[in-house]
Image (tube, rainbow, N blue to C red; front, side, top):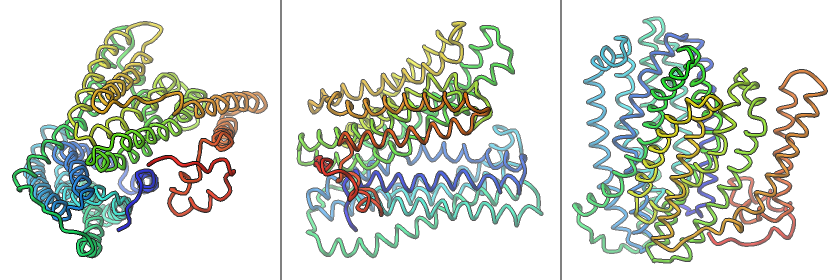
Length: 533
């Protein structure tokens, strides 16, 4: 199994993430036509329970596996990597099986007492087996990520999504005649069939290619006891799992505090709910899109840092963090400034609600800080300091709650205050993460060096976007043509500015899967400069 640089791994995971997101969005159109809004409601009732239990029980363990496998693989300890994998697989299988049973056994209670609709019990039963198979799948993905081979994770994600979508549509169609609740249950079972398909793929790779790898490499000692491996896994995994709950907790607190504070300043219940929908259902949806890349970059960065740190190579660790920060800036800066420049028109085009551009204008800068928080948190995880990011994010959550409480009632802020609270929360968390990196390994980002050229390029992009939109909007009615043209012009101007400035190198373009080498050939000669990865 070929090992990739963390930049190549990030691109591979990004492509898989985009494909999965597109499939996950498109299937809802025919599915909604099959089952209607009532069936869609029953289907959606079961999924939050599944994702919440999965986050609590298994989120941190695959990352812990990747850290421990990367450390041992760097030392050539094949026995150690296998011991980590099999111990982790046993833990995740046990946790997944227990979670599936508890969700199955509690399905009727959850449907009647929590979801207030007894028909949702079948949908919960349908999704319960997925907890086991997804947990086991996570062990294989963590193992391959630790070896810095991201193709198994990426391909299994696409396979999982394709099979899940197919199951959702076919099962809903076949079972609809028995009732809406059966159609919803068949659809939720798609999470299990998708996980099974992905599991078959990664298990095949493990037993075929993994066998060749074990035969061709030194065995190492594998001296850690099983008890010590278990201790290391939970030491790393528990904080990561807690961190995964902080953002959903922030969203839950938003749902409680924001409408309440809006009502306290005189808005009606309906208007307060509408403003909260513009913030959470529209503006937040747009700001979450760039995270597909930053999450992929963070996932790939964790084992890369862990490998470098196993040799206490501070220079290589710093170089890899700097490369991740630079690429994060290249992606998040245009996303943030572009959404700010066309906040109203984009909201109007996508949601037929230009008012959603008001919170989007204040939420968009947070894209940059979320990206920096993710890569700095990944670096800390790779160093084995998994507790620090969760504590820092919790501090950000406290700041957000305080700002929500104080700023929303300010008349000229209102819903803007909630958006500012989210942006400030991630700014604080990212700042605290970088402070921790300075204290632990003496790393301080050279911000002008890393972000100067992207900042100049994004400034040029923003000016062009605003001018093009204003000109076209004045020529003809409607927002579709001016908005889409402005976005396209902005993308072209930004890309050209980066290339002409030599900020995008041939080596980095070559890392793009499938088409990178061909694209790199057309870049100017001065972009041929290396960056340590």
